[in-house]
Image 1 (cartoon, rainbow, N blue to C red):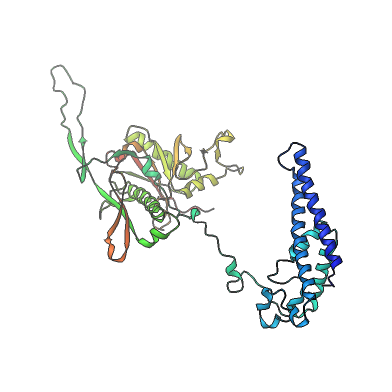
Image 2 (image 1 turned 90 degrees about the horizontal axis):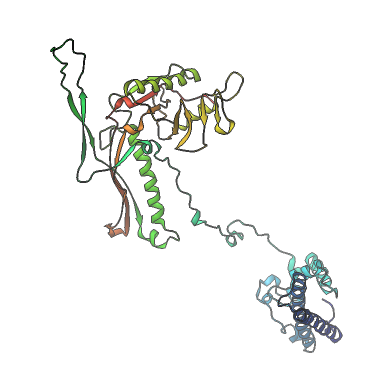
Length: 458
C-alpha cells in the first residue's frame, strides 16, 4: 500500500481545497450568467468534482487513520480500523487486513478508481497505483487463494435474480367466438316461459283461372302447424378458494368470469350449428328437418365452386328470396386462398389488387367475421364448424344461408358469486348462466349445407 506520510496527507488536503473551489466557481459563474441551472457540460463537470471530493475525503480520512495507527504500539496497531473482513471466514482473517480494497471498507472503492481512471480524472495517479497494486494482490495474496464463481442457478446465487411475474399480462385461454350465431336474426328472449311456439302455414291456399262465367272458383283450404323452440340453459362455474381471491395481486375473480363468458360464447355458437335438440340442447342448423344438402363430387375449384353456385340457386328456387351469407371453417377459406390457375396466379385476390376474372375476393385478413366474398355473397369464417364429419371423420361443411330466417332468442348472461354454498371450506363459487332458444325451422329452404369437403391438401 506504500508508506503514508504527513506530506502526502497535506498534498491531498490541498488538492481537495482546489477541487472544492473549482466546484464553487462553476456555480458562481452560472449565477453570474443569470442562469438558475447548469448546462449539460457544466453539470457533468460539477458531478465529477463532487465525486472527486468524496473520494478525497475518504482517502484523507484513511491516511489520517494510518498516521494515527503508526503512532500506536505494534501489538495495538491492528485494532485501529476494524472492518467486516475481521469477522469473515477464518481462512482470510489474518491476510485481508493489508488489501488495497477490503470488503466492508467504504474508504476505498475499486469501481470508483476504475471509473476515475477510465474518464481521465486520475490527475494524481493514485487510482492507477491502487488498481495496479490490487492486480498484483489478486495474483499472489493469500486472501485470493480460494474463490468461487456464482451463477444464476438456484442455490448458487440464483435466488438473487428472482423471476418477474407480469401479472397484468396474464395470458387468457384462446377460445373461438360465436360468428355463426351473430349472423342469425337475434331477438330478446321473452320472459315467463320455457318454450316458444310460432304458428306456421303448412300448406297454402290456391288460385286458378275460372274456366267460364258462373263456374266454380278454385277453393283450397290452407293448413297450419307450429314451430316449437324450447328454452334452454347454458351455464358454467368455477370453485375458487377465498384466499386466492383475497390475496392475489390481480382481480382473479374477473379473470375467471372472462374465461367463463368466452366459453359461453363458444358453446352458444356450437349449439346454433349442431345442437341435437335433446339432453337440454337446442335444435341446431345441421339437424333441422328439411334443410338441403349438396355433395361436392370432387375437391377442386370447379366442383366446390359449382356446388356453392348450386346452393345459391337452390335457395333462390325454393325460398324465393336470396341467400345472405356463406359460412365456412377457416381451413376451407384458407384452401380457397391457396388455389392457383394454370398460370400459377391466385384465384382469390385482395381488393387492393383490383381483381378481375377471379373466383372470389379477399376483403380482410380477419377472424370469425366477414373475410371476403364469393358469388356476390359475404364469406364468414367460424372455427366452431366441425371438421370431423363424413365417413373419414375429416370433412368440414360449408353453409349457404339466408341468415335472417334463423332466429336466436337470448337472455342476458347472469353472473353469481356464491360464498355460502361451500362456506365450510372457505370456497367461493363463481357462476354464470343464461337462457336461449333457437329455431332454423321457420324456413328450412333457407339453408343449404355443402358436404363431402374432405381435409384440404396444402
